[in-house]
Image (cartoon, rainbow, N blue to C red; front, side):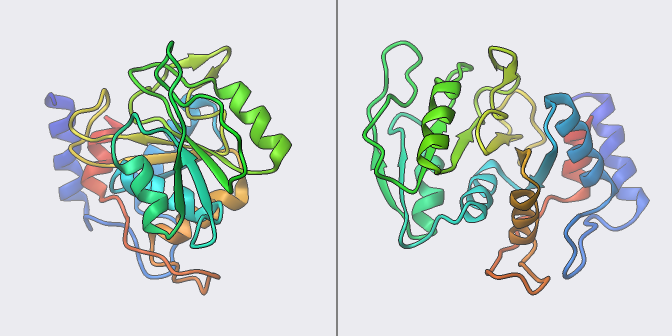
Length: 225
């Protein structure tokens, strides 16, 4: 954290409300929107949805693709607990695959499941293009937990942009940090709207419940800097 981040945080505090959300709004304040715009642009993604943590990002991603009590989600056992906790919190059964010996990411598995959640560990993408091909053939969603691999690449694509949704972290331990915070990216308009609803109580009379997973203007200002 340097002078630029301090100035950005102070400017957000002097500017007005520390949160730009109102009941029923899909979008937050000016700094949240600016962060989403810049982050999506940097990755070449259509949408970015800022939340108060990457764990919240995983939760909104799972909710957006329809993970719930009748779902089975396959993921890796070699990652931070939130990767499995998010779908489990929504009632899904968790199936752990093995990890492969080159990237330590999720290895291929017999996929009689509702969704796949890979984690891109230690700055190295999982075999994302192969996983996306398999998921597309089975017509199931692929979620990337990309907290540890921002701006890593597989071919010409950034990690976090190959799957249906990719989740990034601004936690204090991460490469780009604002203390806490997270952001989810997607090219799918409907999934983006569902994630925006879920993070703000789903108060637009949406088809599901939602939670308060909103990012503040100060956090967004620091992350944007």
